[in-house]
Image (cartoon, rainbow, N blue to C red; front, side):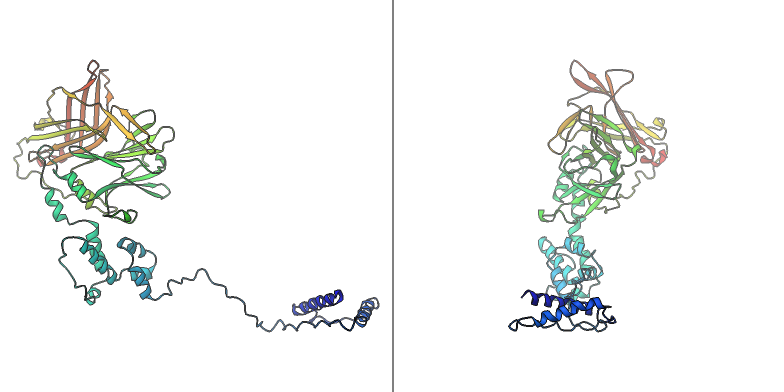
Length: 498
């Protein structure tokens, strides 16, 4: 058995060598030397000595020459880059798309050209539009009978898509604009602003763009409504370092009816955009043992952890003036701009307008600290200095009933309270009780250089200036407002001041 097994393997090796290019088949046989004849004679003797009952192993079949193609069928290797979805019939893809909602169908259009063409089919978007109309209590002006789909396809491509997003994106402005006509006589702002924002499901989001291009979106945690502004807070999530942030964007967002589509695209209206990378825009206004407060334009305040410069929370103080329009009528990259309105026409150049009203509110993110209202203020030509018109306010000593502080809360339940810092909202109304200048910002009380018991709260920009002087009464443990100066740029006043 051992000899037969050895002969089988020897024959197998010889067959493989013959099949190899340049093997024994192609080589020329050389005459054997005298010393090489002994193994051949020994092999012949061993074959003659093999028992008769043992089977003789059959040699393997001859291999085809290398020049001939092999008849052995090899398994097919699949190409991973082949797109099998494109090989599907368009009818099947449209059937799959019919199960998607409007937000998901919009995202599908960005995959490739085929999906863009199929996802803009008027039949699918008409079904979504009909479902959106059935959810509402009123009917659209332009309707198509559900049974006649021929009229649906006759429309230009994308017609029902735009009509669907118009109904889903922003409510009809004819309804809420009528509610904005009711003005609060005390503040000069729309009286139903808070109720209207709640009925329209308006919220606000912060988008941070890092220097590498990565974007992070943060949803609001809570808000606080005061007399003429709303303070919105963001304190949850993973925040980057302030040096890594390039831009900060504040958008108004319409929340969906259900919580199942919160992570899908929603209508966003840009309210403000700030370039955080510009350090000249920073202004320190306060600090405590844990955080520092950085004040930016547009009423946005950023709290950073001391030592690490990582963002802890963000607050925004939004004035009620045109807040509903700014939160709804803007786009993703362009904010809403109200039309320019001429305040006075055909006025005597020698006339000094009077009857201005100034409303000042101090508050924070949880409570109102104090508010003052000054009416029938005078503004004469003699009071214009450096392009700003100053209002002559009364110097009555008004007590501040609340403690001036800036409470904050960060992710993980950490919280604190920064002393001598607060939010400030200023509204200047003209003779017709229309907003002339609106300010929403954060500020801090600075110790006066002339008196250790007096503190000054300052704000200055291109549109106006505010200077408030407080006196600290140690015996009563209370602040008193002793003077208030408000200056408005002449470009915001009557044309006769220009």
